[in-house]
Image (tube, rainbow, N blue to C red; front, side, top):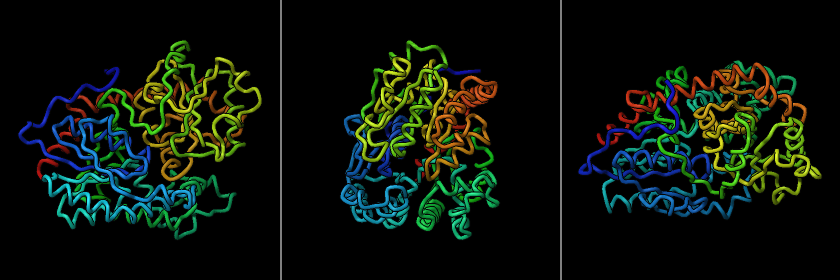
Length: 460
């Protein structure tokens, strides 16, 4: 059985008389804002009133969500972000977990004076919120925006840091890590340039997840069943796998960058499954040389491509001035380069045949939901772990081994788009797509988990 399009609207609703308010608080980064707003929409559809607390940095567009109440808190992040090491998110997270404490406490306390709040749903990365919730005597449920498998792998990071695995000899890069054989040493190198800071963050986050009243996951049971068993052991509190969040509603945008919608009409002119879609997300950066190798690699495939080049993806660049000479003339109408795209719609388009991705969790889920095979180029934090699951566990993608080298790019894309291996990948990811759809209809695993979450919140 295959269910086309978005999952049907869920059939139960909370009676109006029991409408209760939930406060939600997201980390101020695109990959965290999107799932939190999606979760808020899901809970609103179940009858809850929603208050979104957010930082001034990367503030969401309130007008896109007239059914929510928004409360902004100061964070001072914009003032110091350029002073922090750009390649290590643990510096950013540590700062935010310090600078937001008092403003968040004051905001939440003020909300409680106005109206009772059933619970706080906070991004797991904001680990300081557990102490605030305890102080104000409000249940705290966390949203973990990455995969179950990433959290399992993160559990061994402090051990790997102590053993010096973050700085292995280059000849060991392709060797599996004994404590977590799915990963190779080169994956550990990519996770963080600051092993101690990353280990401290993971320890703080996991400790406060265990202290919470429950965990919400943007995944579905059938995708990560073995990891879910480990999660139940390591985090013996209620766990709710209600994802993929974005499938509950038609595509909507909480993007911080304006989307170029003209590409949909261009996709309409392309043959089925012929287009390479390339996007490295909202944060990742590449070097000038890597940027040019990507361009040459795409052109050399001879296949049509849609390439998202975010302004500033190469440090110091405005946009396309670093492209190889006469590149756009060379590819002609076979290639489109845009600043940002409506990604869910691009992946759902019949012309899209492959997704070259940075392996962020949101992008990975969106690709699975539309049955689009992946080429993976993970950059940092959880992305190398996700890429290993995509390529080595679920076998629905191929890892780009020679990072951003034109011949490797061309050969890897052709493996997915043109070889027998690509056909097998297509069959496996199509099977997962069907499992996603079944999980969301009445009686499915995500449907039942959401019903359990609603009942649990109402029990507070």
